[in-house]
Length: 340
Length: 196
Image (tube, rainbow over all chains, first blue to last red; front, side):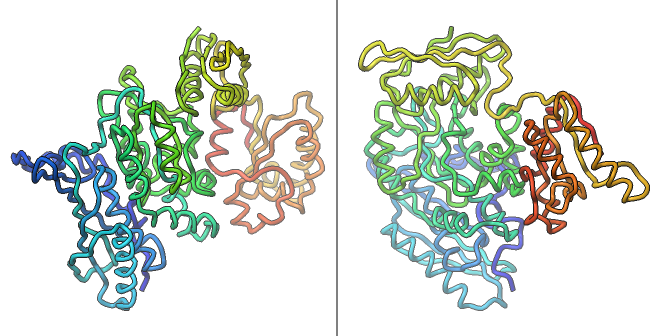
């Protein structure tokens, strides 16, 4: 029995496409509770519920099927990915609940390994594992329902960048492409190791640094790829300018993009965003990278220009691949994003 | 003249702003002038300009003020990843010329490739795919002529998937490995494509 996901891609690549979702979310009732500061209408990364003037809860859930062979590594990646939304909103993680689907016929040792991997990351986040729920399924799946906290005055939304801000990306791109190459047995050891290392990395450290700086917007870059997450960030009010030459890339990622290692999820992201962005100057390989779904990707933050260099330097202490990739400009015509 | 004030802006923002301005005036042509406050930015801007095939001049106004001027010719074609129009691209999708006896076909193709070396203007790019991939192999009898073309500036690319399929990747003897993107792009930008 295979541990790896049978669907085209495990991890965030399994995410249902952005335009597929927006349609039927509209049919769901809207909340009237004023304490619910952020709900699914906001297309933000997590729900936020205000309890008092100084305290709000952040609630988020994420799970997927394996994109790596090793169960423990899978556990670590899934947990890091699930907690990421809390960090993106400027909060810290309090506790998490395990979500488990596991095949009846698969050896239970693998399940144990997944849970140990997940617990390692929860511990690293200085949070508690508080329980969970497990069911039998044809394919293993794992993730967390995460509860975090944030000061309601300090919530960082994902679509409130200010004109003049500088954009910083904290992790290198290309995990989807590398995973895809790895499935075909074509990925180099170096690329695979770098991708795993990147996916296991908590966004906690970058998030802790950004608290000291005027960060106006932040999102974690996951299944929708850099470009679609950047579109969300731009909203209707500004134009984000992103320079492909500044993007931090995982080793070999560009090469795999040239070799058609793109995933179905990457294609879904492209269909969603293509009409709104002029990509005619961009090499096909860079286009793939921009649409590549990132399992447990980094944070994309929009920070005041006067503090951008300091902010980057602080983040680079623990996350050396972080880079300035662009800036926030006044809205130009109907363009939300300009890619150079 | 489009003027950009990038004083006080962190690297690589001045480069990003200049690049954007260059792109915006590439049809009409003109000059982009960027003001920056440090030597490193000046160097990065010059690098960016030469990467795009553009001329740049810089001036030091004082210890924390420099200007860089980038000249953008009208209808600047060569920007970012857009390749220039190739005059002639020849696509070899087989190792023979015409149908009929394979030995004859191989001989004809060999002499065709030799004839290419005699052209006044060598072809811009030769593409090899499917069984054409055998022509760039160590065992190919067209290698000598392909080397002459390479020296004349012709680009030679062979489809990587085809090399894998025929299990001859190890013995590729000349040129680069490309993929379907590359092949499609080269063909699309060619003024003339000859197919075999």
